[in-house]
Length: 69
View 1 (cartoon, rainbow, N blue to C red):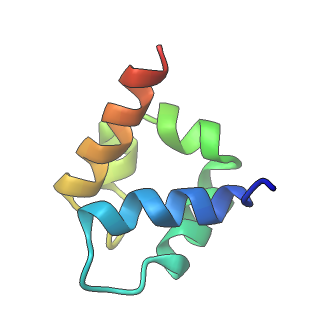
View 2 (cartoon, rainbow, N blue to C red):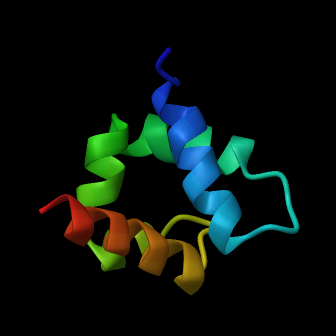
View 3 (cartoon, one colour):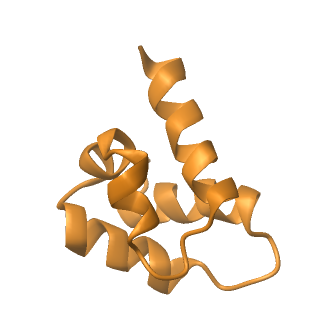
């Protein structure tokens, strides 16, 4: 079975921010950028503008992007 994009993103964010509920942030990112692929491929500068998304989360997303190449 496949997970919805926001749940995959939630799992990635939780690894960088394990002490909080990241589901709202994951859903906000999907709403703002349009899809999981667009979140992962967003520039660090664009991601840094999202409230609640810290440096560790941005690095995690960029690692996923780089490993997918």
